[in-house]
Image (cartoon, rainbow, N blue to C red; front, side):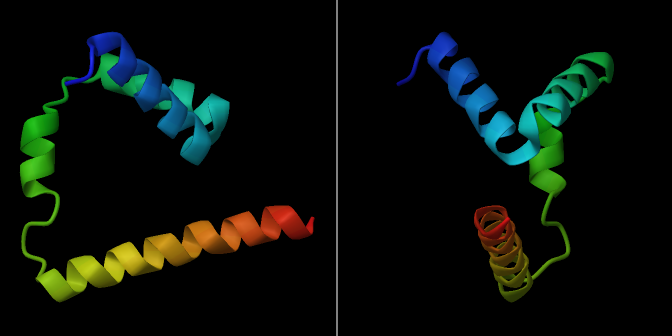
Length: 75
């Protein structure tokens, strides 16, 4: 089991990688400012979607990430 400090560091690394430093900071500020129940949000995240639809969304998201990485390499 990871320590709290390790989880925080990993979380910030992931946010930074996927959002960039400015949007990562904005995300943290939004979470702190709003009453946010992660467990409830997570339970309802895929409500009403079939396994196939969830899979399609995941594949589309991965394609977007891959396209973005390729675009950065080519510029």
